[in-house]
Image 1: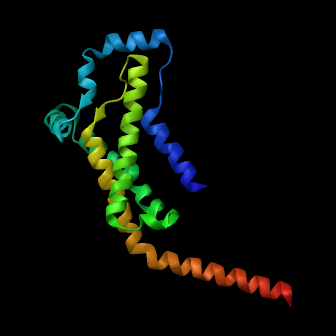
Image 2: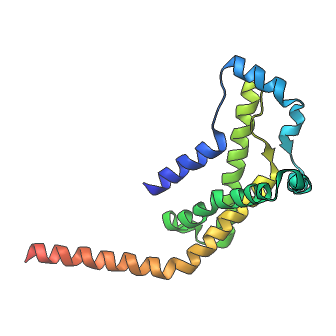
Length: 168
């Protein structure tokens, strides 16, 4: 249940609002300017550019750009090894983050391509920071795994005890 809610939040943050009205799209295209600015495939170019402009916008934009992208897939690094046993290595956690982030960026590209307006930037930096966030989440999972296993074990014992009481 919480994993489904998390996925909905991620989709909402990364794909919405989605403009489908031709009038709104046309207005946005005129405002946006050069569509090639919607793509950044050279690592850290947009981060450096944003950092250079941070004197104009303030340092908080850097924290939002980097921190927000790291936080976005951080929970996935915790959920994935809990939900799927075969994802319990750091390499697979990193791969999950990479694939998940590339799916988000691909959807942003496809939505932009289909409307003719790229309202979200397709950025390799996002993929890097999202993947790192997933890896950091996995590291937290590794730290709390013994406590999680203890809680699950206690829950199983409690359920078995309840069944024994019912049978008596």
